[in-house]
Length: 69
Ligand SMILES: [Zn+2]
Image: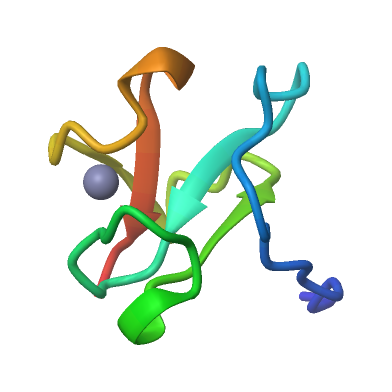
């Protein structure tokens, strides 16, 4: 499996691009991206690694995912 270069978001997009999902890491979401190690990025859907997250972060962007550990 090729590991794609990952770009952390410095701000939230207005919409999640078609075919991609919004993902954040295991750190509890903070209001500011990058704060206390909280990171988010856009990724290709990957059911083996990403699970739907119910934390209510970024409600405007609909469903988001987190990394399954
Ligand atoms: Zn979440």
